[in-house]
Length: 118
Image (spheres, rainbow, N blue to C red):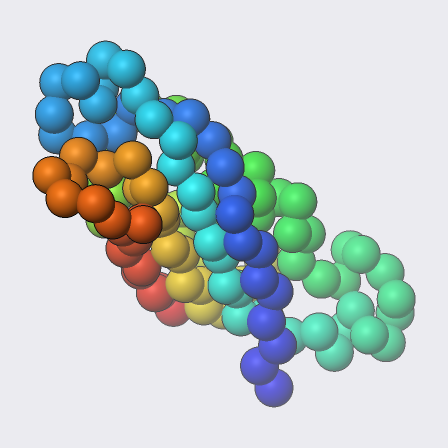
């Protein structure tokens, strides 16, 4: 059985990017998480200890956004995905990192990358 936890729009301010002004001034990043797990034990027990704590997932993403800068959001997405996989009960994860203020020289709504890991 595959069950899913989704969290969208985890927001933080970080200093990721390859350009000097991105590292100096920072910008807002958003992360969406989709975690595959199994709810059977939690359904039977009705106990939060038998499921994946989505607050912990959100804290992992936020800590990565606001933590040590990386050049590429691809690397940031991989870091978050790897950390989420370390949580007991997580069997797969997809992380999407949004960089809505990316230095793109034409009008755009958003840029994002996604990384999936089991």
